[in-house]
Amino acid sequence: MAQPLEGLTALVTGAGRGLGRAEALELARLGARVVVNDFGRPGRDGSGVASAGPAEEVAEAIRAAGGQAVAHSGDVADHQQAGEMVQLAIDTYGRLDILVNNAGILRDRMVFSMTEDEWDSVIRVHLKGHFNTTHFAAAHWRARSKEAGGPVFGRIVNTSSEAFLAGSAGQPNYAAAKGGIVGLTTSTALALAKYGVTANAICPRARTRMTEDVFAGFAVPEDGRLDPLAPEHVAPLVGYLASPAASGVNGQLMVVHGGMVAIAERPRIAAKFDTAKEVFGYEELDGLLTPYFAGRPAHETFAAAEVLGLKRD
Image (cartoon, rainbow, N blue to C red; front, side, top):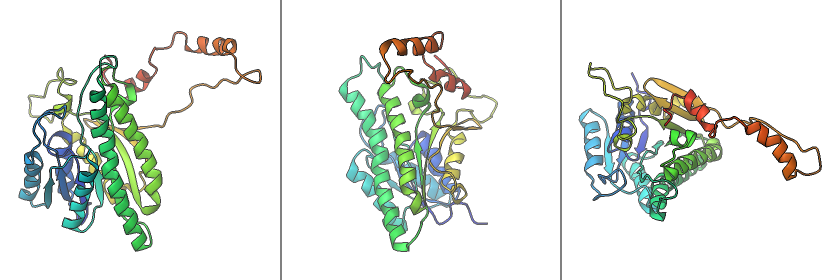
């Protein structure tokens, strides 16, 4: 029986460890040929010496299980290297069909203490890294569509975070990057729909090298059950979004963890005020807005976070 992704080629960035690794293995299990990308630096802040080891290890695991995979150890934040990893998929397997953007780093600091480099580096890897690979993949699909004279198959799955949904006091760079990724996703979804390409974003919650501090207080089950925070809970949604079955899913944001998928709505208007005059003045705004916000939580975004089960600090 044919697998859902049989004959398709996927590129997964940040696939040497954690979420990316689980996603690459799942796509391969579903029949995809996989380009496994990972820069291979050991530090979750992007520090250390780059290594081809993590990417090659995952590619070898896929091949050992009977799948097809090739490793790439380039930096997604480098525009040229991002193009090279897309081209590797095309040169090796004839085309690219699926792009899963997962690579990222953390450099946490309160906004009043954060350095320019700590801001720039996180934005560079997360947001620019997502753009770089998307740019080259989109150009590939657009060219194929023009050649075919109609839509082609293309899937993008981007990685955002609940830090964007609820705010994260010690991660202004990370939260901003993840919010930017949602904007990039919805823009890409609109731009590429006519070529047959979909773009969606997920907010995964999983125990990985990047979240070891966040979930330090949540014990791993000792009775043999799968950890509710295991990356393997996230990977199946990525496999679904990458498949032909998800052709009608485009421009969506989904929170996923431990057997739960929540589809987030776009922001809605909570209240609307019209001036009784030609133009608002300070006094009128004070009379309307001050009573409205009186007694409300300081951060209204926590309401959405609590619905999704996000732990509030």
